[in-house]
Image 1 (cartoon, rainbow, N blue to C red):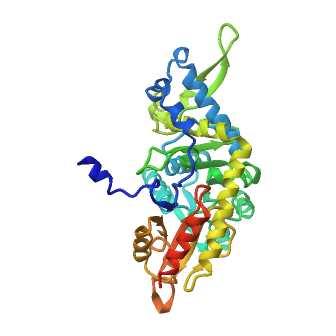
Image 2 (cartoon, helix red, strand yellow):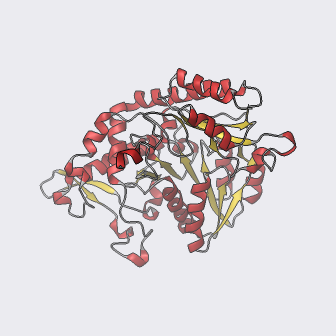
Image 3 (cartoon, rainbow, N blue to C red):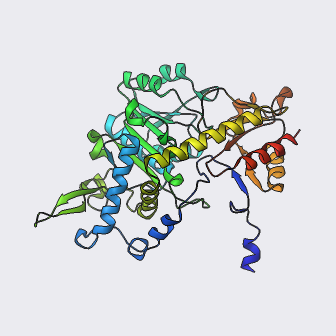
Length: 404
């Protein structure tokens, strides 16, 4: 009976997945699962006793080192729950560091992330102000008007939820001109090609690490990455593993700066987060160690090339067009001539998962109302990873071409 129920599921082993929006169908090397299933890692708890937890602590330390190299930051924590919680915790860092009661968030940030941030900020009485879009990216004129001395900083995502790259250097200048903090949420795979956020002035970098060796799952467990500058170390939430020397002069690893954490001084802690995603962080560590710099660049480049091929082919279809002309990485948004549900049904019939309905959250892409005045009926985003073949992309395009 359970097999019959499971057989009703649509999974990526049978369907070509072009869905994105924060979770992506990237290749996961077999070695990742083999390592994280080892009992020493799979059943380990928080390594409060370093004398019996050197393996776990070193794994966390290696993860932190890799995240710093990837993001261009000085310091990473041991992980957060997911990308949304990492962004919300970063927002809390901004408020605590600046003492300001207002915070800007780009409308191009994932709607799900924005809801989580709003929940966190509501509890501490911070006003979260949304900066609107100009097309498919942030409106720089509105940002300049809203970024005042009362605002602690800006939360930005690039590539953004619609898939497009933001003008990060111009945005950074506007935020820092008012002594605000610049928080950037990134796709870690994109950093195989794009500049590290540290190089363009980000103060805090967060990410959803699912693409780094973590398979798609119904809500998780995923991985929240959070890295920052040294000067904000005491504001950082969560565990931090550090390297030290023991009484015999041998190198060892410990949990460091624990006075920030809720298990030491709950009322003065930087955050109430305690348990982290160490097992999933280990998966990301193994993945990055396996693929290396060149491998990550190849994964990113394949994703970029295939996504642009797909976008070009879809844009040639009658009634279909790209939502904007901004640069994008592996994800893009198109305006469709038919309702999102109709497009999805046709694709599923052909064993294709794709066409994330973003029009419901961004009605401005449709001119305010879907299908109004002969305009587009839906706004759909498609994600194309290195796993997708040309045949699968062509099959997607052919299926979309049948939609009128």
